[in-house]
Length: 233
Image (cartoon, rainbow, N blue to C red; front, side, top):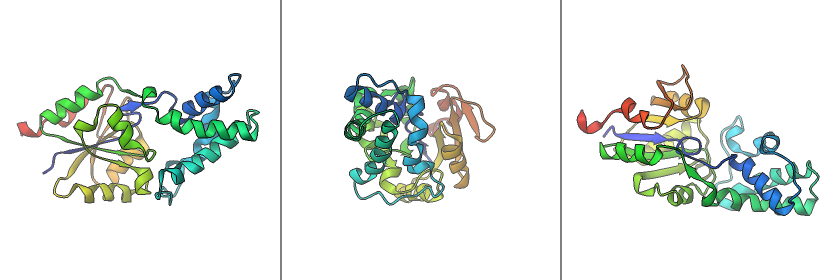
């Protein structure tokens, strides 16, 4: 069957405002209400912590969620110390940032996500999520009410490979069995669109125009018109 859509997650279907840097800023303000650092100021200090920003696009932190988060927390702690936090306060806030980021109350579906997924499911598409994300991807997907519409989800933290690494895509293909993916839909040209091209998938870029993608849309419901309905073929 050629009826599988692969979706990116964060930034495509759902968002946590400020992403992890925003969660760290929120946690810092809980520990020290006088914290004046911004999400924008924290973000570049955290970038090296995330394996999808490395040249290798692979990591060996797949044994447990704690192992994956340990390096993130280490960079978070050092970032906060640059804003005057003591070692103890920085460590406390860095640990709190993890639960702050994963708190489902801080997440929201992007406009049109639920309706778009439901419409596409109704006309014959199977949805897969493939995301450069923390180990708790399934919990966030479930907490947002998407689980009934998602057949499988793949977190790079669990696989040990990051998009656009070809190995990540090949792993997903192996898990699909007889079904075959046709489209990749995401918001990142490098990870989603270039990664899709590497393995022969057609691509849809959301939110911004680009010559790199096969199609670009400014709203999720437009994806329905791009990919069509298998049951009408």
